[in-house]
Image (cartoon, rainbow, N blue to C red; front, top):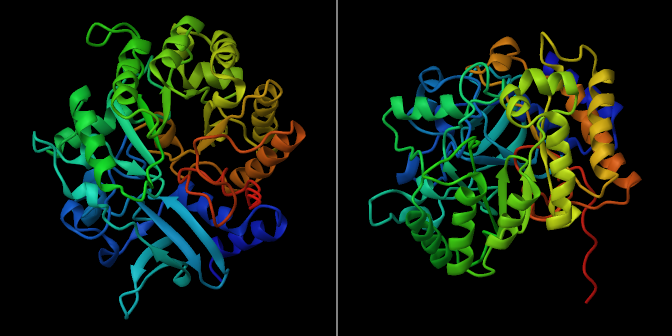
Length: 439
């Protein structure tokens, strides 16, 4: 038995209340997966929906280091089912790592599977190319470039500003590669629009709305880099808000509108609400004060941790606590050289943050940290955080929600192993499934 298999099975045995699907999913998210050429897509001309690089690279290498996976993109996501662990349907965001012990490859019959230490551990499904990706805008741009969908088609991800005004070592978040991802796509000659035109966003959404006849797309997220001064003459609330206003005017009620932005003053947050946004994500990134100051120097300089948290609580008065869902980057707590050195310490700190927000009715969510190699923390911590941290976080997260009587947040699709579509962490997979609605 290979060492990674032994570790995974040991954690499944030690933490039986965490779904086994989530153990594999977290390991794939934290450490990435390799792709055999037989498992790569034919980009936008094929039958498989390719990886869109919708905001960050979420890879363990730069494009030139990914080999054929840089030329023929891997799928946006994969679905794990069956195998010796009898896995329920599990949607996993693709993070490429040619050195990973996990590998997706086709067998002699052409059927894709996930292999760990050389042993096939599950069947693999890939997302079919959606009909709306086969149509282009009048400008010739692809829908995938302007309005890609993730979470198996549930979420339209609108990164309308693809760089961040927190720039350079003294301002950029130390785990974030948004600016590098922009640079590498431009260097590779790929289309990667810096600031997306409102009319083109509406045109792309119209194509999605026209061809998504099953209404699989349920929500959109407006996001991008922080705006510390002005962009196109607008502050952050008005810049992102103008897209929401246009979308809601053209497609009233079609999608759940979400915005990921900085923790802004209450009056600015009210503008988001007035523009039609329904859910606000003022991400707090990492709970520990010292680590926030070290890892988020721009946010500390322009806003400050205490003010950031105060603004999150204030925003609940605008949106309602249930509709304020700040993200944190799970795993950076343990990044060397400054992070916690034991899982116990890291879980205690993160749980303190969960309890702080949940005691106010606010339910955070998290993204599993991918140590991208062009970031300071990724470069220093290529292995990321230990898998045990991620598994214990799932346990602590669910317990804290139960302690405060909270349920899964809105705008993320169904909860529960076998049901969840949220692909960049397992928090939704680990929560109880919704009770069937009585007829």
